[in-house]
Image (tube, rainbow, N blue to C red; front, side, top):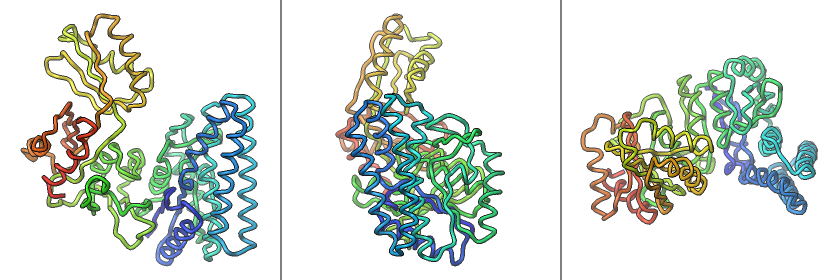
Length: 463
C-alpha cells in the first residue's frame, strides 16, 4: 500500500518516543510506500506562540528563557533518539541553524514590539521544522533512505490567509506529485513538516491548529494514497471521554459524516477541515496509537458499518457560554437574527449552536466562554440601544452534550430516549439544537450536570 503516516506531538514528545515512531515507520516500509508527516513535539507550538506574545510585550528575560527551553527540549530529544555520534553531530548542526534563525525572528519582534500575521506564522513554523530534522536522523540511523522537506518544499501552496491558510489544491496536487512522486519513484521516504506551507510568493503560511492532520490528507489526496494513518496517544475515537465514562470503548468504524461531527465537537486528535481532502478522494483514514501499534484503531470511511446502536458517541463540550436574547419587538420583525449574527461575525466570534422559538420572541446562542464579555458588550450596544430587544441573559456555567450517530437518521424515538435518560437523572435541559441531517442532537445543561448526562445516554444506548 501507499500510506501517509502523520505523527502527532504526543507521539514525538521526547527522544524515546521519536525513536519508537521511527521504528514503526521502518517496520511498515518493508511492504509499503510511506510518506511521513511530523507535528511539532508536544507543547512546542504553544511555546512558540507564547514567544511571540512575550516579544510584543518586550519581556526580554522571558523570551530568553523560553528560547533556551525550546533549544534544550530538542537537544535532549536528539541525544535520546540517536546513538551514532557522527549522525548526531550532523542533526545537531541542522537544529542549531534553525535555533539561530528562530532567535533572529523573535528578536525582531522584541525590538519592534509588534508582530504581523505573516511573521507570527514564520515563528510558529519552527516546531515542525525542528522535529522533522530529528525524525530524519532517527530514520537514517535505522537504515531508511529518507529526505526531510518543509511543507512548501513538498509542494503545498496556499492562499495568504496567515494563521488559517487554505491550500490551492490544483497547483498543490501538481507540485506534490512532481516533487514527492519523484522521491518515491527513487525509493526515498519523504519526511514532511505538518502544519506549514507557503503562499504563491513562497512566504511561510500555516494551516491552523490541528494542521498536521490537514497536511497528511492533502498529501494523501495529491498522491492517490490507499490510506492516511493519524498516529496519536489514543487507540481511536471513543464512545465517550474515558475520564467521564469508565467503560467507554473504541469505535471500530465511523463514516466521514460522523467523524466530522465528532471533530467539530472536540473529539481528541481530529481536525474537521483535515477530513475534507480524504473525503473528496475517497481515501480511508485510520486513527492509531503509537504506544499500542498493534491495536486496529478507528477506521474512517465513506460508509459506516452498522453497529448495534443508532448512537455512536456521546461528547461533552466544556468552556462554553450561552446567551439568550429576548424581546416582544423581535416577533415578526425580519433581520433580527441577521443583526445578532452580523454583530458577532464582525468581532470574529464563532457561534457553535443557535436555537429560536417559533414565537420569535427569544434566540439562544452558544459561544466559546473566552468571547463572552466581548459578545455581551457588542450585542448590548447593537440591540439594547435600538429598542429591538428587552433583555440579554448570559450564562457561563453551562456545557454542551452532543449525541452523534448516522443510525439516528430516520429512526423514530431517538430524541425521546436521549431526553428521557437525562430526565431520569433529574437534569434540566436549557437549550436544544438538531440539524435536518439527524446526525447530531446537541443540548445545553449546567456544567455540574454534564458528566452525569453523558453517562446516562451512554448507559441508555449500552455503548
